Amino acid sequence: MKISLKIAAVSTAALFMAACTSSGTAERNALGGAAVGAVAGAAIGNNVGDGDAKRGAAIGAAVGGVAGAVKGCSEAGDCGGSNPETRDSDGDGYADANDRFPNDRYRW
Image 1 (spheres, rainbow, N blue to C red):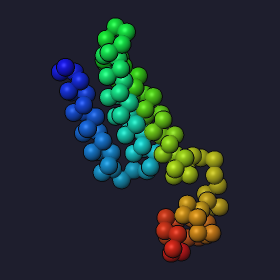
Image 2 (cartoon, rainbow, N blue to C red; image 1 turned 120 degrees about the horizontal axis):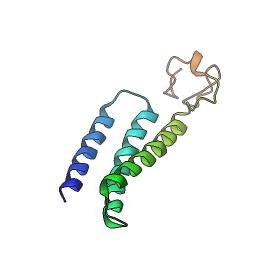
Image 3 (tube, one colour; image 1 turned 180 degrees about the vertical axis):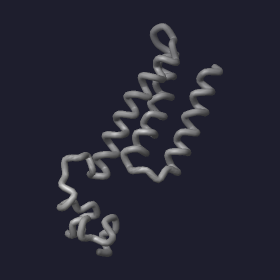
Image 4 (cartoon, one colour; image 1 turned 90 degrees about the vertical axis):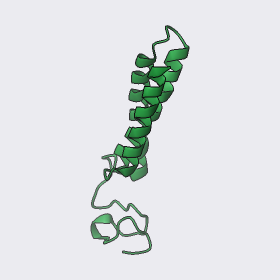
């Protein structure tokens, strides 16, 4: 029970820190995914197999972190495949390189 409580406390703190970070979308989603994955992995690892919550938390954090990063990368549209000269983040028809407000579609 103590290990589950510690994991829940650390995961909650990680989620609060992720909400306050000024980094990009991929990083915030990776951190949130890792925290949620750690909690889910600990719960599953504790209740199945040999009852190893630590290993379940580690596996869950890794899988959740990767899934969160992929989700954040696709949401932000900066997965490395698009050309920064033609990218239009807000969909207003103006490339971000020429747009003074690249995240506000109503101003350019």
